[in-house]
Image (cartoon, rainbow, N blue to C red; front, side, top):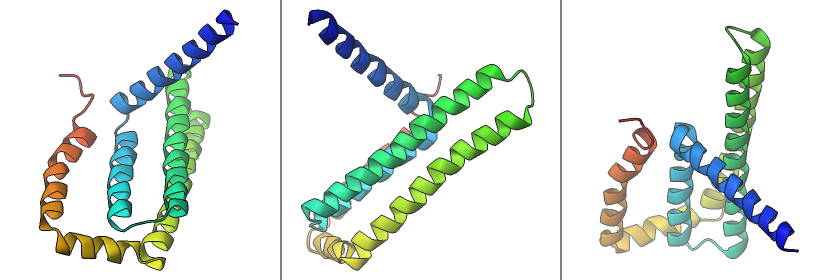
Amino acid sequence: MGKNIRKLHESFQHALRGLGLCIQGERNFRVHMVAAFYVTVFALMGRANAAEGAILCLCFGLTMGAELMNTAIERLCDRQASGYDGFVRNAKDIAAAGVFVCAVACVAVGVCIFLGEGVLWTAVQFLLAHLWAVMALLVTVPAALWFIFHYGRIQ
């Protein structure tokens, strides 16, 4: 029993290490994280219901999971290729297309929830009634941009 728990613990450690590597080394993953943050904030301000929140969480997981797989494929391809290789290029392009398809589907879900269900309008009304919230959001933008474009860069 103890050995199985240790293996499970090690599996989680390896997964968290991989997540950290992706956060540190992949700008596009950080873009997805920042987008998920702002979508979550607007969903809360717009009073999205539990089902809408769950659907948004699935979208975040789908897109970020696809980005993790894309990163793994790219790194393996880069390791194996010793120069230009058309098959490697195709594999990397197809993996990137997988992320793109997931992201487009998630945007469509977001449009349905935020526009079709009125969540965006409710969020805008909240912001108009609470200017402190507008200022708080604006303060986060430089940090978000720094995180996307500078986090993980070698100094």
